[in-house]
View: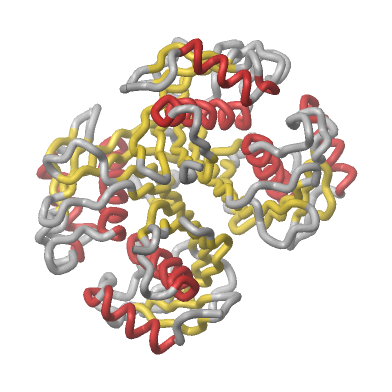
Length: 139
Length: 139
Length: 139
Length: 139
């Protein structure tokens, strides 16, 4: 049972991360899977729509954040404590990158999320990440 | 198209890693998925069949090795260059641990394999690993 | 023996990554240690100079890139294949973040670089990363 | 201020991990650095004293455990939640492997430890690991 709808989550992201407004969208958000989108023509990217390593990291990080927050609710705080990311293929120029995020563990004090990144329309992942978020005790 | 059958791979493992003979088995090996088993009552484990962190690392490592070798064949050499592993839950005592390994990338010089570990019969993963193997140039 | 001076490397970075011009500086670059600086008041950061996780990732990534390129020279190509990063403390607002990068391995086909990040003037690291760069065969 | 002497810590390790008795020793343990030793001729290793990847993982894991426990004391519990390890060079056959462990962060609920592994007498590290231990609330 998720604690946000997609429009609620998109409004929440704009509120907490105003500096990346318009960079990301949510295609799907349910108990099984979250799909987030990095817009290839966003101003944060390189000219030509090439998606850099840091942009892929940002997408994986925000996807793990959204997948975790959707489960614990906005009164909670979380902070990334670890990311391991493998960059496996070059994303296709000019294509959005999609992140498929699955929460593997949601404990009292940490979550672990697996994220696969694909160029839209591609069948093989361009990157694979695992992220840990710490969930501080409720105030 | 894999370059080994399961009995061929089991014989190959005994040949190259005689010191762990009997520790691991192969339940399934095809183009999509490899399933390896760590026998909980093996002599390598703690008394009582508790599967330690190092034993889970060993299982993930051998599963990634087998999944890669099945694709490149025994004339090749590979060596682990990286492993990231999240330990998420305590394995159930006395149960075998199963590794589900999927090769995410098989390049000319490296492979990346995703491995999920489960206690047999359990639905939630006990650990999650990503391993990189370097594939040296053919001699 | 490094293949760039600091001014040469700064010019090279501006050439290959024009989109981040002004974001990073090089404080020290020799055979033992590279120190790079992320300018806290750069336009890439959040209002208020808070250094985000993705900005710290970017700093670690560029530091590992510079440390590797300084050794292999500009005719070579490299690409990040892996990053593991632990975020340990909150950077201090308004302070530059410094990256200390040490090349642990420089092989024919990959480099491994250790990076510690500090808020300027702070004694305890805010993040710790290990990055692998693949070095493709010379053309 | 550490909460164990070296003999106390060695006795504690034998008590909690009897199955690896004799595998590891402690060369140095103080506030700055822990040095642990993996005995190359131990029965846990391959014939010939070759130190395998899983044995290096075990050494890094126990070194991070000892470095953390030395700071928090034996009444506490800890459990490995993450390890990232880069295998960079082949250890020299027949030589002990030494682990240099430094605690980068000791928080209320987790520790992060950096570990470099060397073949005894060698100058370049054979492996580099970062481990996270979760520290559950005191009972």
